[in-house]
Image 1: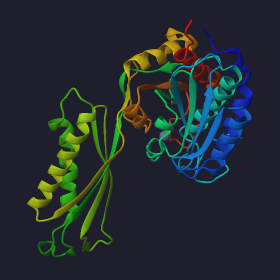
Image 2 (image 1 turned 180 degrees about the horizontal axis):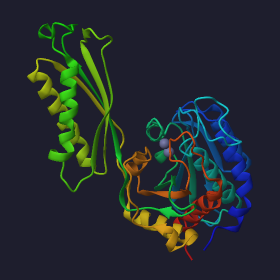
Image 3 (image 1 turned 90 degrees about the vertical axis):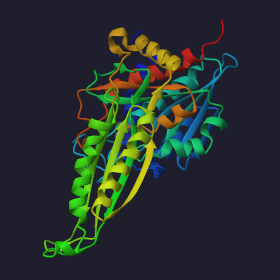
Image 4 (image 1 turned 135 degrees about the vertical axis):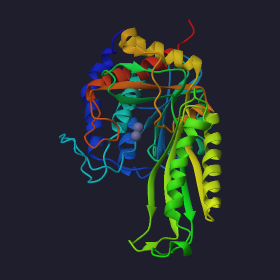
Length: 389
Ligand SMILES: [Zn+2]
Ligand SMILES: [Zn+2]
């Protein structure tokens, strides 16, 4: 089955919303314009309930089906942009220098609004559909903030579903897989504390730059020598800062880095290995190390039955040829993982076609895939909440 007729009719209107959101990007939890725009549309549609300020700036809309009682599903979109100077040259490009929708959250929000409009008109399901518009995905805090504010419990959500566009995947096609589809994201800081002094008298110092260099090199052995070779782990040091002048050995050297993996058990194992190696090397040279580590996004883990349901709905819209049921996972992270830790559900990719990559300054969401995105949400709702016959 191709896209729904009504979804095709909504195409221009939803593309207009998408471009409006794109032209007015906002960051993190600070989304006054975007959240207002979303809440106004949801109220216009006649949703049964629209609540704002959940998880600081999240919005929840409730639509009850008119085919009797049933369970409750949650459909989630993210609303925040990124601190990037846009170079897309599009007519609807960001009007705020240094902030842009480079991850397509403008498209995610608009497509879920389109689905809300459709579902509020038709209500051809039993039970309840809860639409979740989440802030602060890019800083890995919004999903958790909404969960901590009770979004899953207060609205009685039984299962949750999410969607993200994917550049390079054929426009309007879908890709999903059971189990880990996106990586766990951890961040770490390693601060080597030595003894500073004159560059001409290194013997009177404990040089943190030399020690940090050895730590960076030694960390490369974690994946090669400590990690089970059938697991996927990334350990990257992504920033290194030390020193102020050519003739001073500094007191401190600070490294930032990230750990990515598709297996929850690897997070703690890798954390422990980083700490052990850094402490050991620092101790060998008479320095100390301060180590901080956190895990803002866990593995985005798709549950089996919900993945099958999502893939079958995708195949209804894009055909089997347009539905990859064994997608290659990616090690980028997604804070929807926290919702999948709390409830069964599934996260699916929708192809954005041959566009610039996510987080690239020339990226733009592909408006041509809006009917497929709306159709997916609508069909998913009508299938998951199918009335008993
Ligand atoms: Zn992103
Ligand atoms: Zn994103």
